[in-house]
Image (cartoon, rainbow, N blue to C red):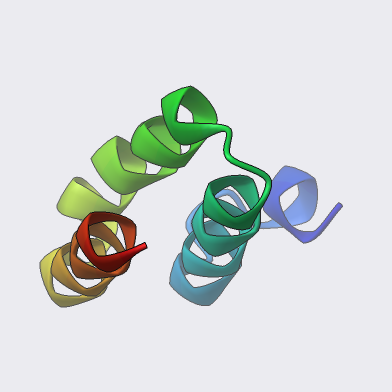
Length: 54
């Protein structure tokens, strides 16, 4: 819901990406990663590292 209200909210995209990763939905996690690359490259890298280590 937060992303619907504030699509630029970086932490919401990061949290959603982590959630998708934990659900083994890497396709959707990568979508959040791609969004984060433009909004917050550091968070995007952190999310990618989490996906690699999971």
